[in-house]
Structure formats: structure tokens, C-alpha cells
Image (cartoon, rainbow, N blue to C red):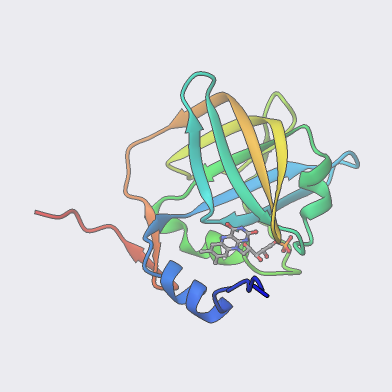
Length: 166
Ligand SMILES: Cc1cc2nc3c(=O)[nH]c(=O)nc-3n(C[C@H](O)[C@H](O)[C@H](O)COP(=O)(O)O)c2cc1C
């Protein structure tokens, strides 16, 4: 009798393989119905579509901010500049008062905006798709701002500056 076996990669090997992917770093924010700001650092970000303008970000199901993102109407993706490593660390720390002293303001749509990013993408939550132990948040970008500057880069579990090649 043929038996089907399911082979799965070990989490350690999966993490080690993914550590070779260099990415930018984002901080994603939202505001809950009670007026509380929430946010987390994310490298699992991608553009999805140009027309309509869609992006995605993946949120760990165990994140403290999960419920806020799972129920909010929108979110803001901040593409971080090279001098925002402290902000990236703060929004990756559980329990920290992440917005204290951050200079947060509210967008016309009522979402938290942080200063200093290279770009900000203000999104309406278009769809939420379960993705294993993460939730894929797909947002339609309805407002954006951007400026010149060098990005913060994450590679091999460390932050880096981008050094132009050539
Ligand atoms: C460079 C970096 C990238 C990260 N990328 C993600 C990500 O894409 N998705 C995610 O859910 N958590 C990611 N994290 C972890 C979260 O930022 C962290 O667990 C955060 O504290 C979760 O929010 P919480 O405090 O509400 O639980 C990343 C952390 C770092 C340092």
C-alpha cells in the first residue's frame, strides 16, 4: 500500500534561508475604535498592484496589535529611512510605549502618521487573507507622500545602511 508522507522544512532552516533576503524595513500603524494607536515593525511588505494601487503586509497572528489590525478600516505603511533604526527597534518591542515622543499625528482618515519616513502609504484595508501563522493585510493606497533619502535595510538578522554598488 502506498502511503503519502508530508515533508516539512524545519523552522530553523526556513529562517536561515530567509535571512539571505535583503529587505527594507517598515513600521505599520493603525488606530482602534477606542482611539488607541497600534503599530509594529514589518519587513514582510510588498507592492501588489499598480492599478488599483495595492500593497500587502503580513502580521503575526500572535501580535498584541493583531485585533486592532484585524478590525480596523485602514493602516499606514511607513518606509523607514536609514536613521530610523531606533524606531524600528521600538516598534518591534512588545509592551513598549511605542508612540511616546514619536511626534505622531493623525491623517485626515484618522490613522497614525509618524514623521521621518522616506515614504508613507495610507491604505484602506481591502482584504484580509489568512496566511498560516500570519494574516495578510492587503491595502488600497489612497494617499502617499515621499522624500529623497537612504533606506534602512534588514539583512542576516541585522540592520544595515545601503551602500550603492559600482
Ligand atoms: C526587522 C524586523 C522585521 C519584522 N517583520 C515583521 C513582519 O513582517 N510581520 C510581523 O508580524 N512581525 C514582524 N516583526 C516582529 C514585530 O515587529 C514584533 O513582534 C512586534 O512587537 C509585534 O507587535 P506587538 O508588540 O503588537 O505584538 C519584525 C521585527 C523586526 C525587528
